[in-house]
Length: 426
Ligand SMILES: [Mn+2]
Image 1 (cartoon, protein in one colour):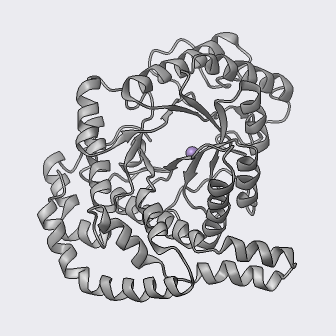
Image 2 (tube, protein in one colour):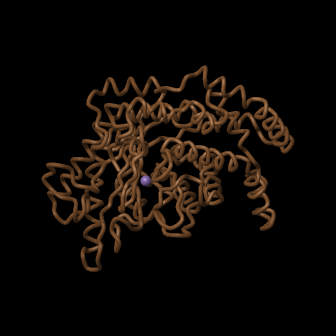
Image 3 (cartoon, protein in one colour):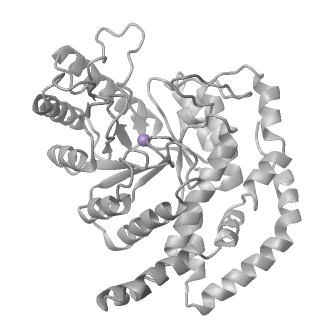
């Protein structure tokens, strides 16, 4: 199933007059404020977010999973789904594979499918949070931190396999997230498990190709409920430093305790040149993994303010690898992802409207009210016509959700794959 270009253009024509009116109004207003509208449009059009291969089917909770009809059941079909997202939004030009859920059987064929959709392979993700069939060692009591050396060695070997698989696809980075930790006080020695983890990630780092990066993700709790070995950005940063220049921290928005100041963490990591990857989602309580921007859009905007500042002022930090890391329990996964992509672009566009020179001047004067006005003026601007403009400049849909529904994409997928297809993974 592919989006038909003629049909897409036909639907765009119906929306074009309203788009032109709203865009002209906004564009004129921003130009009068001295904004570089063309520069902002280019940044928006260039911004690409990877879609993880495990997010294209229905997610679930530990209480159950409600399937979604027409789910992709092969890696080819998952790439096709990202192709649909990319065609409509022009923002999803990459896929992030999860190994071993999505090991290609025919690398050449898989690369061709991706290229036909204009999609590249972003970071590859290892999995040492569950035992695979026929695995010799168990991760029940940890992987890279396990007190048992054989388990650690198996987890190290798996990560090296993942690098080799990614290398064949053109990926340039490995993301490590560990479920390792303990459920009860006294269960493990904090120093020993951290030392084991450091030794293990250093072993994996040795196998990293010269032009690759390694991202170390952190999370405060879950699946372990007493302690997590890589619990916060400081631990991740420390491990990345222990490995070397190609190792970085990865910030996942859901991996913080409530009310953590994530925008400050982003600033600190970028100042130190160590923010390598970034996972988008939203949450109310914990690692809820719901649609980006659905609960705390202002926080997302403040985080983007730090990201934009870092991208413009911290040449020591590489351009971050962006990915959506969300789960779709009750929505059509593709519609949910379109909503997330829009929310990301909206927060980015608003952050790009912040006048950094004015803000610096107000900070210098300790004019607290002015500082807040500058941020909130940007936040209160309805930037959607800018995003539409960036999207259609690349051949995308003016209104992706409406177009997805008008084209009856889900119905087409169900016809192609059946109502009972199940996506592998979560
Ligand atoms: Mn994540």
